[in-house]
Image 1 (cartoon, rainbow, N blue to C red):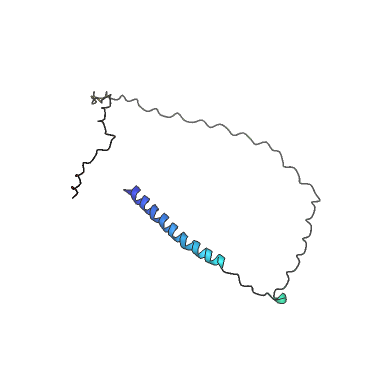
Image 2 (cartoon, rainbow, N blue to C red):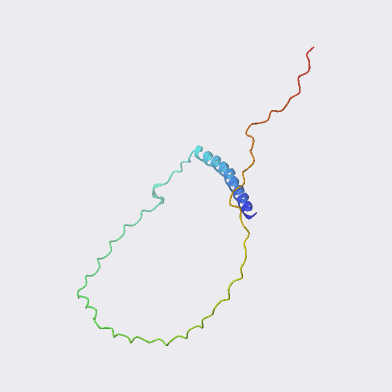
Length: 129
């Protein structure tokens, strides 16, 4: 039932998208067919942008970076874990004997389906005078 609800919701959304895209395509065609108005731009209305000044160069390092000290990391002692208690062994009782129903091993044959269309008897036409 939930799948049918999702399917119908999806089909309604697709239909709404198709119908709205038709109106949008008509609007786009209308906008493309109209002419663009030419607005004169005065020469002195927009001031020119200033030229950017070049950045100064980065300083060069005068000293070398000292190497990292090499120290030996002391080894840590290996901790010993305490003995874990063992769980007691349980024996399960035997399962009761159950008998399962037998399933058929062969599939029954399907009835023959007619492949021809039966003819429908029509009434004879009325006699002509």
